[in-house]
Amino acid sequence: MKNNKRKNEIIEDFNSSASVFSKWKPSKSFSNIFEKSVLNSLKSLNKSGKIDVLEVGCGHGTWSESINQLDFSKKINYTGIDFSRKRIEAAKKKYIKDKNTKFIVSDYLSYKVNKKYDLIFFIEVFQYIHVNDFSKFFKKTTELLKDQGHIVIIDKEKYSIHSLKIYLGKLFRKLPFYYGHVHYPSFDHLEAFGRSFGLRSVKRIKVKEFNAIIFEAKN
Ligand SMILES: C[S@@+](CC[C@H](N)C(=O)[O-])C[C@H]1O[C@@H](n2cnc3c(N)ncnc32)[C@H](O)[C@@H]1O
Image 1 (tube, helix red, strand yellow):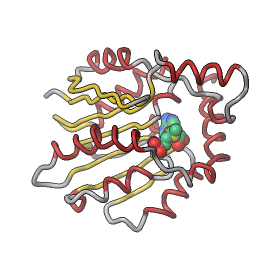
Image 2 (image 1 turned 90 degrees about the vertical axis):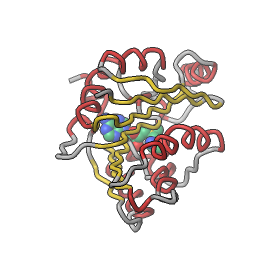
Image 3 (image 1 turned 135 degrees about the vertical axis):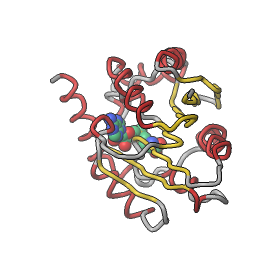
């Protein structure tokens, strides 16, 4: 019940801030960590057949654009899901003309699909997931992943100066309302979770305030 209330508040926050976010573009360091983690993972997965990619919490589809600029993008089937209807509407308006690109309104934990993915990634999504739900997210993700598929998580680190600044900003009410439910994850904790679900931790990357972890499904 508590979890549902929290989820509905997050959806409402993103629905009402969708027009603000639709103008947002990533910083240089953000694009840099995306390239070093998600794009490099895709390059390492570049195989003869199609590459199935799922972005969880895709917002207005920013990262689909970078994926569609890869020289082997024709081989990629990209699906972005987000539980904010308004953000998916914005994504469709901007990027749906890109071939092999699909946007779906769905809560990840209720997302039903008959296929598996080569790559599943989460960018600034774990900051909205309650730590008690981490195991449900890892379980779902390992079930949706192909053998040797990759998972990438990019977020800010719980034990960092940035996180402390956000904590103080919230405490003194200096931040916009949509920071209300932000709690950055600890990457050591994420790594331990991944391992407990049988994943291999391939790499950890840090670029300024951004952190990334790449996991591989062991077969
Ligand atoms: C900070 S935004 C990041 C959006 C996008 N990944 C980006 O980097 O531009 C977090 C997004 O995750 C979505 N989200 C959070 N939890 C989700 C869940 N359980 N299922 C689907 N979407 C979720 C929110 O609606 C929001 O659009």
